[in-house]
Amino acid sequence: MAENTKKWEETGRRYRTYIKLEKRLSENTVESYMRDLRQFAHFILRQYDVTPRKVERTMIERYMGWLFERGREKTSQARCLCGIRSFFNFLLISDQIEASPAEFVDTPKFGRHLPDVLTTAEIDRIIATVDTRTTKGIRDSAMLEVLYSCGLRVSELTSLRLSDLFFGEGYIRVIGKGDKQRLVPISTVARDKIQRYLEKRRSARSGEEVVFLNNRGGQLTRVMVFTILKQAAQRAGIDKHISPHTFRHSFATHLLEGGASIRQVQEMLGHESILTTEIYTHIDRQFLRKEILEHHPRSRPRT
Image (cartoon, rainbow, N blue to C red):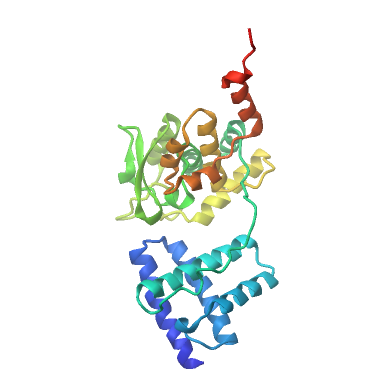
């Protein structure tokens, strides 16, 4: 087993370099893929003691069954299978295997899950609970406003830099997945809150250009943003499952309800495929019914 373990470790290191440098995945995604790969490798070595090149479809299916037996959520199973497919695709393009054993393994079936959508009133209540008498409060208020007004991913928010602010033109530059850049319009409210925070915050450490800083002058973590939002929602008495992604989802929904096209929303969210946007954007049935009754010719009274 020792020799085969070494093969998995060597191949794993090359795969990590591939997804980080060539696929340009974020550090968090890389770590998630590698964690899943280590678990998969451990299972294969324990059950079959073979190298990556000798893995067969039935082995992967048995692993997926093992995940199911352990009570893993279907979304977690699907993510693991996605990582396994990515790993064997890497072996395929690097001519280490002739066909991927993961290609025809079925993805767990699950219904579409849509996160809660907040109303504009609920978002206003959440942001209003922040005490803006302190620099930290001014930062938190600005941060939450940008999350909603610009529809950013939490990783995009925490990595936002001073050089990404183009207030004169009314935009911010966002570095999204795969280091892809997009320009997102910024509201007057969000711009003013950022400017107030920048005037109040203490000087950043040398070379630090990140907009939103922690108490030590460094970059905020994703966990800190989750905590700040969760605490604000609790103070506001909002009884929904809320995360930074809820603000992003609400941003997309409110844009559609306001008349924006799905293509425009796709651009704002930074989605590569419009199918992803269709999953995110959920318009409530009452709004749809109202729009149909108002605009469809068959809904107008006959004269």
